Image (tube, rainbow, N blue to C red; front, side, top):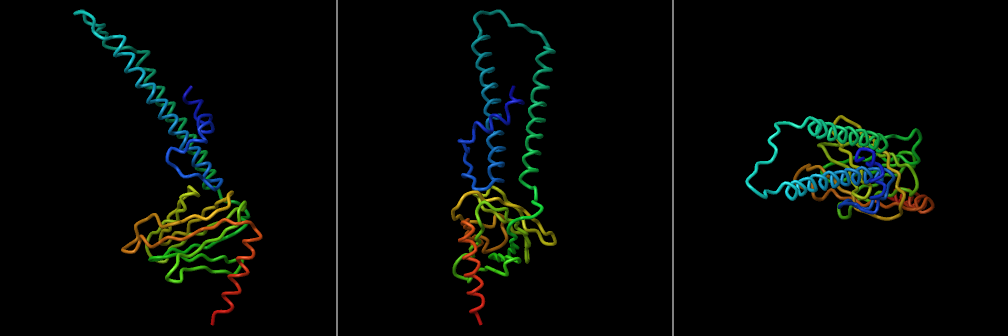
Amino acid sequence: MLVMAVPALASCGSGFRFGAPDPVSEQGKEVLGLWNGFHWVALGVGLLIWGLVLYSVLRYRRRNDELPSQSPYNIPVEIAYTVVPLLIVIALFAYTVVGEQKVTALADDPDVVVDVVGFQWSWQFSYPEEDVTVESDGVTFPRLVVPVDSTVRFRLRTADVIHSFWVPEFMVKRDLIPGIDNEIDVDVVQEGEWTGRCAEYCGLDHYRMDFTVAAVPDGEYQAWLDEQRSASEEQP
């Protein structure tokens, strides 16, 4: 029953986050489903074990000097406690593989492409199809803007050491590794503004590698692009 109940428990537990943030992306919702599913199954297994221990303590507590049954083995029980955990592990593994494939899948034609470059100790965000580049001015954190209800392709590259692109509310994270160009798709389904950061220790000023990310309606996104182009043209 535990094996068959994993997906159901995850969906029923959508209101419980077990410490995870409220996801604002489709990929984050999938990750939260995995997170909840594992927690509910772990809770069920824990309750089963506690129940069996309590039953044994109460049912077989010593009443007199007679020894309990001294049978050296119980084949059905031994088969059960070998097979059942194996089935649970297999089910959780399959559930994880399906979820991971959904989270890491790349769209054939993303709506927006953003080239993300991490370096010690800040970020650069380039929109190659819109001819817009955003980077820190040395005082404020760089601001990443994406349209809501769109598939955004992040192409991740590092200019020096390993960094990690992480927005907690997206509930997806990917490392930037020298010599490897990683890509992730994120479908943001909720308007808002959040803080992203480097989640891989990368040197003395690692703590400074924050950025802001805003998900806005398409009209506001287009207006922001026009504003960035105008600001770039005004620079000498």
